[in-house]
Image (cartoon, rainbow, N blue to C red; front, side):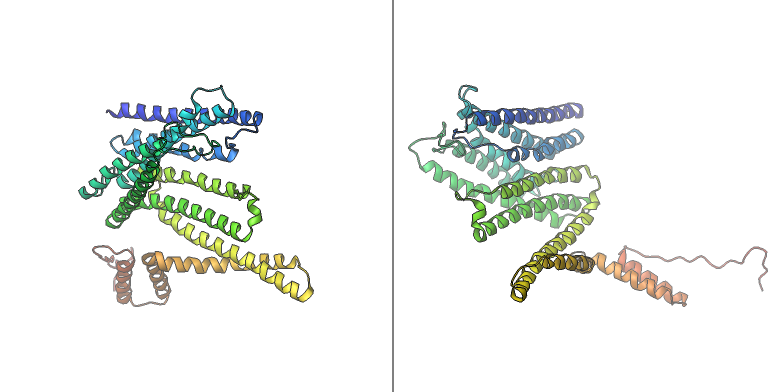
Length: 428
């Protein structure tokens, strides 16, 4: 395919994905209206939060078109395009099925269309979690030994898609409507799906391991590119873990916040949706890495995230811990709670901000950026000695040593311009 044809195809697919997103917004509005007219419908209600989840997925086709139009021979751009297209298609068929059941007779075959999502979510996840990680960033496998994983992953994706679509039983969120493609009377299909699904997860794990090995063997630009994608994946993963941990803590210690039916409260759905919105960081990071825009800024970004993420967690823990501890003290001393606990905790946090930030920054530099930390300390020590050094030979030796320790060049040469007499002055 010529570059011109590749660019035309990439941007056409991106435009189609955006059009599908706009169509899903229209379907969402129609679905909400239909559910408002039929509140007794067994179909699960769709909220604004559900629709917002599709917003970060828009980054996939746009980033994919940018990459594919500039580097058509690299499959990373086409993977992003295909993944974004499939996500948008899944959103449409989900809303189509819900709308058709909430308003009977308004759309043909709503259950059949909805059930297609049981088949298509597997390749959507597999493209991103397996093949993007396996081929990133140059579009080639790390070595020939990884061909087996590539072929095995493709076979597993097909098997899981087929078995998942044939599992008998009710479809999720449709109030007991059964799968029209399900093999009724064949319960072994569900067991086989679970077994193959474990193999699917192992393929995802193996792809992540391949990216780690590629990072350890890489240098220069390739290493920086992998840092971008790893940072985005870690950011999303930590968000998911934080949401689940906070929900579990609230469920255990404050069970009344989950309602009588043990359904997730609004605050948890909102928190989880914010985490899903952060999923858009993955295609954005892929775009930065593949297009090499501000490629080396990732080190600064990781450093700042580690520092301010740790600082925020510590300050929040100290703030709420201080409030709880001081309130207990006030209750013991005065018999009632006092707002002075909040004021004292706020002042303590304000006073501790800068000292904690400096200590955390120093710890992270020593632990994760040891070479830069040592270089900075060496330059600071040299600057202090430079003010008092008067021996030129000793200064020359010190300067060469500092350059070797900080810059670490292959060779170091020091050239000093010889002294020349000033114009108009006679030599003695």
